[in-house]
Image 1 (cartoon, one colour):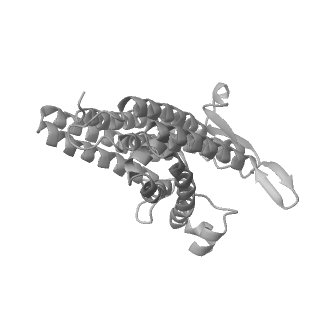
Image 2: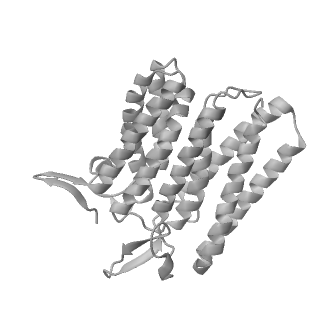
Image 3: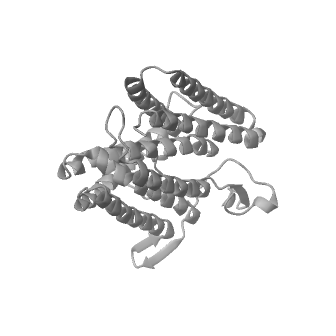
Length: 327
């Protein structure tokens, strides 16, 4: 159920919508501030944010339709009737990239610099989107919380089942809300401390947004596994679409920084150590996902190992990035 905040005649505004709107406003002001400090044109942000929303909403919806076609009459109905159904946030990555390509034409054509200013705000927007789940029934975690002492936020939230009874489950979206706030903070630190640190090979522009992809990808790789309504591709029912996008994004960043590091430093022993460590961490994540799907009561150990694996994957990419920089 989605509680109503404002009801006047035919106008109905839900609390979840107000929370998301507040997140977009906060994102707008944060991006304006960072764009100015990055010597960019602030007015471009007023084009970037609306375009991101315009592109992202249908893309996120279309991906959800592909994964959950049984919930819609057709693709056309999914894209025209937003009164029901859901979204896959992975589509927002493409939406933001398309919006930056267009908006950057008014900012000396630097899409990478514009995305750098947008990255911390994007993390903040996602945090508010996840927070909005507290005001509806979309926080559908599959991990039960049976200990009474833990049956409250930030670890658990009450969900009404089909029998009308309240069950307590791991508060996936609220925990992700907290993680995205941490990621927003880390991106702000990175933006102010390292956005102008020159790379030995390549431009420093775009690194803040790449760190957003790295942190967010590592977060989603673990958190999406805790949901029972994850979206899967038609040919794969083991790893969700969001997990695939997250893993591919992290791998792409590893390749990107590896190419620049080898080009700048030549092949070194630490390259092999980072690559081996990354793939061992990926193997840890994969095995944990396999075990938690086969043995649901092992979730504590499996998700602990998965979280560690995701952290090590992100750490390996960050170390490769540091090897590219002029310190």
